[in-house]
Image 1 (tube, rainbow, N blue to C red):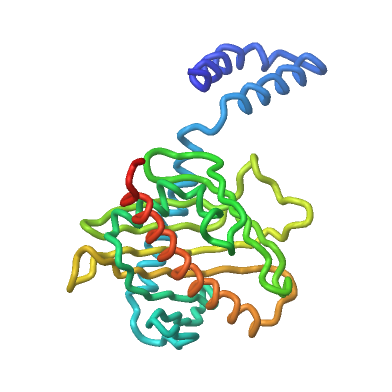
Image 2 (cartoon, rainbow, N blue to C red):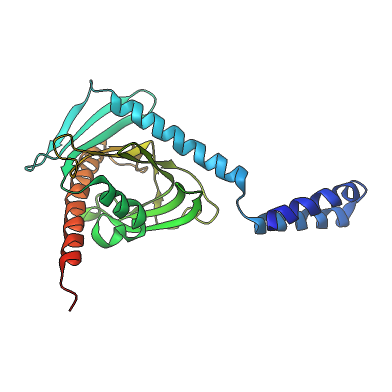
Length: 261
């Protein structure tokens, strides 16, 4: 209602503003600016945020569809693996491939529905906060990462636009860096950038109650960090994420099965 009222008032007052001079005109411009701020993000802002996320999703799907040129970074004892590839227009990207025991819908509920709780179970994340929701499937988030052991890489924060999409039985969680007036750069924390990033959750062909989980990660940590350290940190972060997510989902099942007494 407020944006519509503002536009109506602006239209009525425009012919009067053309005849204003000096302080009166400056005052009117200031009033319009304040009203626009109060009106908040409107549909035009939604469109401008949704499109980059959809573009990131398409770019990520295109990258993941290319099977050639990937180099193995690490393989865990349980078979979880991280691969990498250098792309001319993106830089180095990392791809986590794991098999999870849960159905995609359960993982989707945890990673999207309970997004702000991620800091409770993933020690590599201090906080995830939703700054703004845009429609049914898009949101702006602020994430703060924890420092690595020994503070080799200090804490970083990100402002991202994220979108969640479904295509048949496959779930996509895509994102990339953006800006938001509620979260300017914070003192003492390096503002890193990411994107395109994308998590793909697809039912396993052999057992549809299990999930083939793929995470494409493209990130610029900023700062003066040797590439060898960045590569090691990012690959380990993805392996750790899979381990922490498994534990979280197992704990959820334990809580659901606990007797109510």
